[in-house]
Image 1 (cartoon, rainbow, N blue to C red):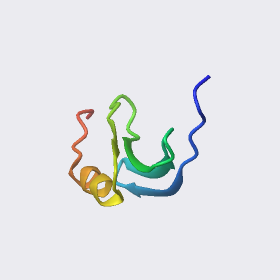
Image 2: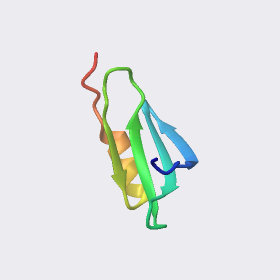
Image 3: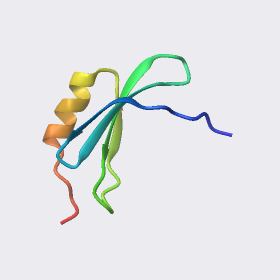
Image 4: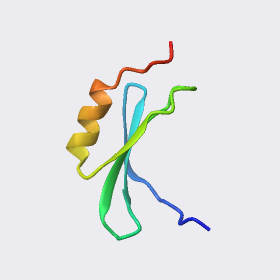
Length: 63
């Protein structure tokens, strides 16, 4: 059974939502996820600044 991930510090920039969580090694990570239906883009980052930059520069391919 996979571990349950609890997100904190949720932030939304355009269609991208950013959340902070602890990975399985106990390190803090940031995930950026596009919430547009059909896009499917997501990525993990080691800093909140990198996740925010990716959210601002994300161009959704779904129109």
